[in-house]
Image 1 (cartoon, rainbow, N blue to C red):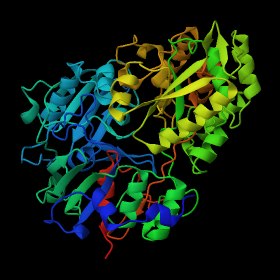
Image 2: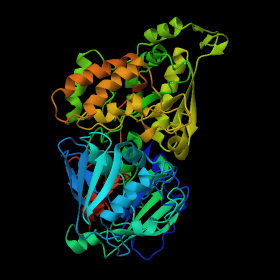
Image 3: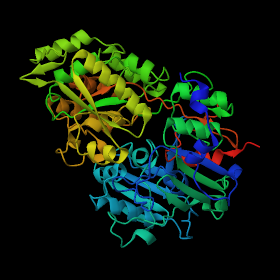
Image 4: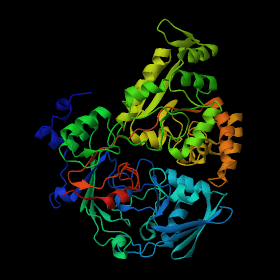
Length: 576
């Protein structure tokens, strides 16, 4: 671990380099500063439906509100803009009830017209390529207004999970409703929606490539109707920290209140400098595990990774325990299956392990090399396998937006190279990673978390790799599903079982056995390889603000770039 003095020697000049000019109209003690781990490409574009435009700079945490919020701690979908979402007996029609009294920040009423307009906009425009819009297009046949506070959705097929998948902030965000009175008549694929408005308790104040500022709307509908209190902070700022060391400096100097994930050494150093810094857990491993476990994704259309045995070879070579210990400093654990290792998923994980389909935390390099050699490769003088005069190369695409991701890939590359595979990183920035590389299949291997979805039932993750979502290379994979284009006889057999599961109620006891049956086909061909559980060591600063989510104060989870951050903001109170 780097010494505290080395890491946190914050000079006045260094601190000023990271401190934005956000004006003096609101006192620091009335301001909450959130860490932003990426540059805002176009701070005057709030069209979140289109590639490269983000909303985690406060837009969906403070301005746009969701219909419902899934509570990870209770498993319940809590009402927000919506009050109920009820299916018919066959789960192919769903009726949404909207909360009375909701208003946009410009005073216009939020109602069924906004919902119907937004959904129809997504249904009728393939250029709206966000995951949420693509998922709605794949699932919804039509939508209609029943009255001002009631909307009916007619689905293309039965889906018992429709509400939480699309409108419940199950993973990161949800399908957000836009104001019809502003979007109507616009080209939805090019409209910038600037300046933006929402129904949330904060209004857009100003933005730049390194920060976004939101000021409290004292006319917020939630307080006016008694739904919730007006939040205490007068101003919210999302500030690009510039990386782990600079976010540590800002947190230690009380110039930031909520940081993105850091390594264990950095957290311990910053906590030593500033004892007001806390995390989800009060002791080791400190971190919260988010539902998006990390994995290696293969493009199964690219040789030699179109060969399942070559993918199995990589599986044998990878030492997951070393990734845990080196890249994550012991703050996570090796993945045993494709699922997040929450309590609600344990029976499914144990079932696939009992069937012999689990993943080992340790490596068996010899077994991996035997598979490579069986494919006709032989080691050259440089220790790298080659065939027909060509080295065996693995190009691994990695998102440079996160130190966590690049550190993990560094360990994986070293393991592959030691075993005889010439593994190389393909670093890309966040917009390219999500905008083109993954959805268009422009990669060979990628370090991702695309099986993300299951929290207390297995279909959400398994359903992301079925044959129906196979798209040609160069066309967008719907909802980032099956970006590796896994499409074999095993895929078809897997898909038949998983598609049947998708129409069954979440608690159906038959699902456990069906998981094992389908998992067999996945495990034979491993189109992606689970690596480790996601480790999110998220520092919070209690100098100015208390009420942050912790394992003890677990009103919901601590991922403050997700759409449920409204709950965090409403729970904050002044420390003094």
